[in-house]
Length: 115
Image (cartoon, rainbow, N blue to C red; front, side, top):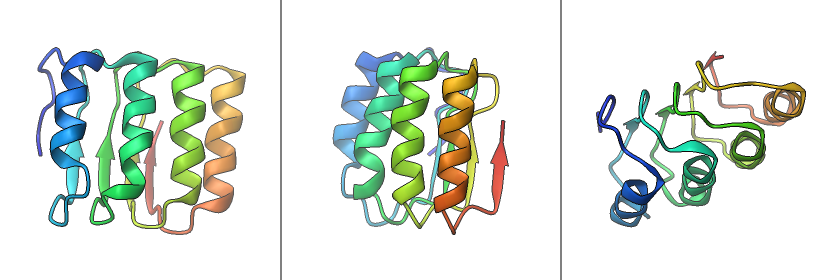
C-alpha cells in the first residue's frame, strides 16, 4: 500500500489503521514523507502485531520523535514478520537510538533497516 507524500496526519492514520487492522494480505505499508508524528508512530506500533503478513514498513520522514520511536521499536523488537523497516529522516536522539538498538538485539526477522 503506497501512501507516501500524501500529507497524512495522525488523524488520517486513524482511519487507515482501522481499515488494515488484522489484514491477512497486506505485505507493504509505505507511509514515508507524511506528517504522522509521535502519535502516528504509536498507532503503527498498535497495529503491527495484528498485521502478521506485513513485511515492509516505511515511516521515514514523518517527524516521529523519541516517544513515538521508542514505542514503535518496542513492538518491532517483538515482531518477527518484518523484513524491511525504514525510519530514516526522523529525528533520532539518544533515547530513540537506544530503542533502535534494543529492537535490533531482539528482532530476528529484519534484513534491512534504513536510518
